[in-house]
Image 1 (cartoon, helix red, strand yellow):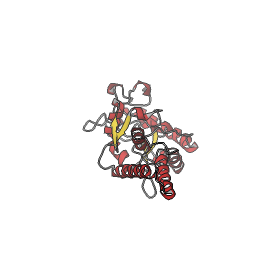
Image 2 (tube, helix red, strand yellow; image 1 turned 120 degrees about the horizontal axis):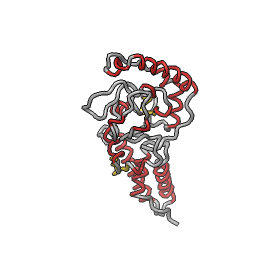
Image 3 (cartoon, helix red, strand yellow; image 1 turned 180 degrees about the horizontal axis):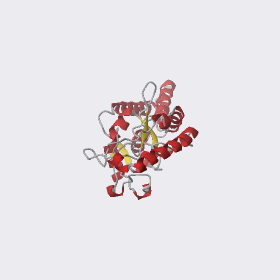
Image 4 (tube, helix red, strand yellow; image 1 turned 90 degrees about the vertical axis):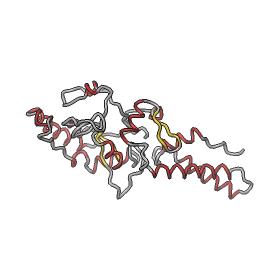
Amino acid sequence: MIPIHKGTAPADLVTDGAKHVKELCDAYDADPNEYTNGKRKLQIRESIYASEAVKAELENCHHRKCCYCEIPILTPAYPHVEHWRPQNSSRQGRGQGRMRPGYFWLAYSWDNLLWSCAFCNSNKNDLFPLGNPAGRARHQKMRLEDETPAILKPDDVADLSGHITFHMEVPIGLTALGRKTIEVLGLDSPKHECRLKHFQMIREFREISIELMDSDDPKARQRAEFFRKIVEDAMLPDKPYSAMVVAYLEANPLPDRPA
């Protein structure tokens, strides 16, 4: 997980979203008990929060990676527009009861939308644990500022490495927020085999580069530089699993080039 820096919200999301949020809020206010007990469901429009303009902007600012696990989301994989605060219902934890409705008034909020892979979005589902569950906002007239989220928001933390690091390819929580985020999203699941393969490749390329860099053969040194560049570039934010690579190379830095 790396920090996300989002641009300006697409104009259609702002205009269409504001109009439909008012309709949702008016419907809820007219009979809140019907929505709280689940007899009725607020109809949130995917065509607004996941419009082509929204998806294009999210894809770009998320470096075409899942905001949580950093797997590249490539065509024809189906990307998910993720609601950080869940839209239809919310749960404090797995096995606990659902609270309805969810954060419906944030369904079209640019601040609440993220770019996610299917695994992370499905694993998180409507989980949104709080440090103060009694302070959960249940409708648009309650203050979000009174909540204490127990998981990290990728576009709200300047340095996520202070919360989550890696031992080889395995994410390790350094703080309560980091540990709960790993748990909720399943970031340490064995299903993240692509991250393991990427780690093995980076480690191998690092070792090849080190082995060849002092060679007397100019072609060998050229190959060493080739593999070194791949390893160094893997730390860039637009590369897959870059947070893992940064943590690995901080613990196992590349040696200086020979004079």
